[in-house]
Image (cartoon, rainbow, N blue to C red):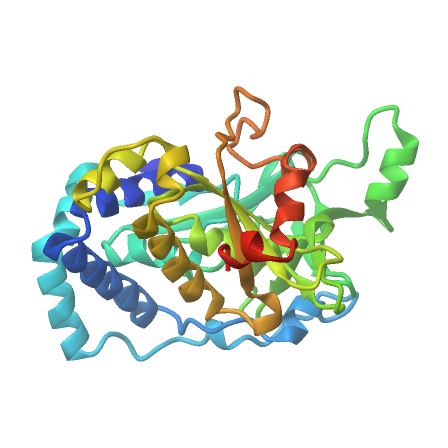
Length: 363
C-alpha cells in the first residue's frame, strides 16, 4: 500500500511519458495509456461530466444528486480486454514495475487528483482510493472503499459524520470528527459554522449512491466579465499531467476570457527535449521553442474539449518561475498558493489580456 499526494503520482506518470519520448515509443506509451483509461472507465463506472445542477447543489438538505457517472457500466468489451493485454505487455507492466511488484493499493489525498490520472492508475490494475478531509475534520472525513471506488469520487462519509450541499454548492459537514469551532476565536467560528455545520469552502456534489465529488474551491471560483462561473481546478488538474508542466494557474476573474500561466517542469524538461531530438536548454530558452509550444497548445486544446467555450483557455503565457515550498509558493502538501502567485505575477496576468502581436502569439 502507498499513501501519496497527487503530485507524486503526476511525477511518476510524467517521468514515464517523458522517457517514452516523441517517436514510436512515445506513440506506443500514449496508446497504452489510452487503453488503461478505457479499461478503468469500462470496469466500474461510466465517465460522465457533472450536470450544471450538480455544481449548483441540490439545496440545504442531504438529498443526493442523481448522476450518470454513478451508474454501473457493462464492463470492458472483448476487444478492449485484448487491447489491454497488449498494452500491458508492451508498456503498462513496465510502469507497474517502477512502482514496485508488490504494490496493490494507492491511497491519494491532500489535493484533487486529475480524472485522467486516476483512470490511468486504475487501468494498471491498481486499487486507487481517494479520501477527503481538512484540519477541522481531524483528518479524513470521507474515503472510498475497495468495493466501490469510482475514479472521480472521494468516497463516503465516515461513520458518525454527515454531509450536505448548501444552495450555493458548498459542502457542509457535521459529526463526531468535526471540530466545534476555533479556540478563543468566536468571530472565526461564527463565520465558519452555520447551525452546527462546518462550511468547508469546497464546492461539491453527492450522487444517488452517496459518492462525494469535489468540484472546486468556493473562494477560487472565477467569474468572468460575461458572468460565467468557472472552477479553475478542472482545467488545472487535466493539464497537470503533461510532462512539461510543473504548475499551471488558470485565471480570468472579471476578464473577458480564461487564460493560464504555465511554469515548465525543470526536472522533466531535459529528458523531454532529448527524447524529442531537441537541444537541451534551460526553461527560459525552451519556452520559445516551437516544439514546446506546440505540445502545450495541443494539451490545452484537449483539455478545452471537456469544458464549454466560455470556460476554455484562450491564451497562455509561460512564466520563467519555479513554484516550490522553499520559496513560499506552495504549501507543505504541495498545493499552490494561488493568491500569492497571482499577486507576484500580476504583470504576466495583465499580459494575457493585452492587445497586439505580443498577446496574439500566446493564443
